[in-house]
Length: 447
Image (cartoon, rainbow, N blue to C red; front, side, top):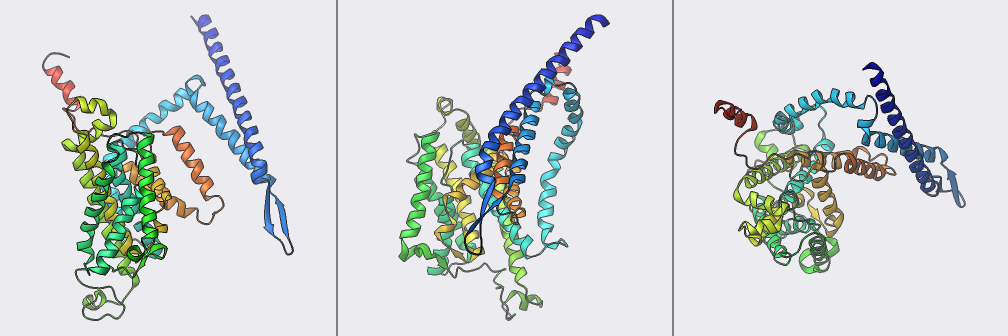
């Protein structure tokens, strides 16, 4: 037996060596292509001299780029053929307990993150910059959860989601300026108006799917932006709208004079601009949690299961007797409503809005958050929003390479995690737990 096993082991080692050599050859070819592209892009840079432009050579940067491509491609090839590389199987088996432990911690991760979010303003490192960054992250989290209803649950590709964001912002600004309504009254009204526009978008695209649906929604977003630019008597045109009213804390304004009707005058504390920022932070945190709660509850209702059936197969969905018209309209309306509420908060936070804040790039960022986080996954979308907003802020000092790192990260995500950070989704409805079913079968004598 030992004599027979030796040739088998030798053959496996030879096959593994061949695969490693093939992986190295492919990585070398990729490095050559990268070098060919990097020379005209990275090798030279023009800078302003005293009298003329000067060329600066950057060959070490080219070498770094080529070496990174070679190493990354080699590791990628070895990863794809891991089952054929000696020792890779044992390494993967060693990671299995760690994956199981992380999966068990998943159920406690949500409450821990929410508790940390509520405690963030009281952390020792908390300051104005941290609070503004937290507000930005939570705004994109809310937008991602709203778009998740349309893209992740219903399977409708929407490239014009920023249009509903803009409708909510301008609705709040116009209602508060011309009618004198408070923030708490304008907030639901902005969501209702955005949902109305979502229904208007839903009617023309009832028979469209795939690329055609994406083109129509993209056009809708551009139409809204062009209207905001050209309807100057109402929207202010390119100049936008300023002087948007701020929310009050139960009627107490955040003013510096500390009069009896102000926040600092009522509580007897010194005025600080951070009080208003913390108040806005808690508002967007509560709005995001409400969005999360509502979307989870809707997913478990019949309308949520209809969304998921529509996402999987529209023809089968119709054959089951599901009204696809109402299903699509409800998805567009509910997703647009959350975007409108987020837009109204954005308007009151900034105090100024203009069409430049609602360009197509915003829709692309929100869609990237949903896709990278995992379509249908609430926790994954929150993690992706944190990575794409706070992560970009961390690279602000490296402005020249920030988008390069961002692009590389997205490529790596599509290679290793094509279904997103959290690719698995909890079923909307289940008859029974697997362990319970197995135990019942054993009790009945079927085991």
